[in-house]
Image 1 (cartoon, rainbow, N blue to C red):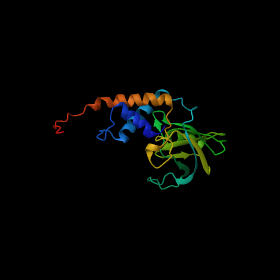
Image 2 (cartoon, rainbow, N blue to C red; image 1 turned 180 degrees about the vertical axis):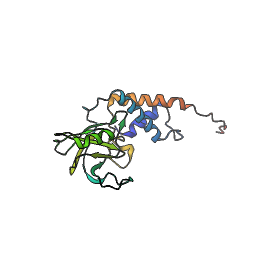
Image 3 (cartoon, rainbow, N blue to C red; image 1 turned 120 degrees about the vertical axis):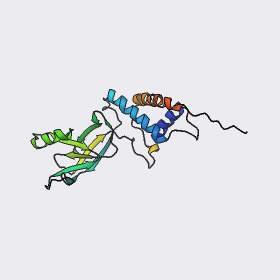
Image 4 (cartoon, helix red, strand yellow; image 1 turned 135 degrees about the horizontal axis):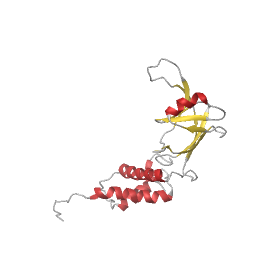
Length: 197
């Protein structure tokens, strides 16, 4: 199923199928996605399902204090991860590892990262998310990450054609929740112009 199909189900559910629809596709998708995140917070155990996007990303070395007033060089590694779905529990992901999956990274808060980064023992490595970037305490040339994308699995230039990565049991209740959220705003003004046909 695609994002366009899910939006169509919401649009048909609220009976907004004419050209003069009050609702844009962006609003309908945002309402559906908000309901999905709400239900995902209640049932966060979806890690065994095949809805995650897995990518290999080359790391880049950056000065972590570059845009601050501290005149020191503090080099670290980061990768850019766009379109990440975040809930109240943080980024939804299955794993963050090296490409051979021998060294996993534990995703922590930035505050915990600064405490733990210098005190790593054995095979424990840490990462934290800030904006669109994941920062790591150990540098490797490439990182493999399996995460839940916010706007589905990209298959074309048009976002409506992206494959939906929402499990079926959550999709149905998310669509019903979106229809329920939009129902109060369906009170349309009465058309007072006379029909001359």
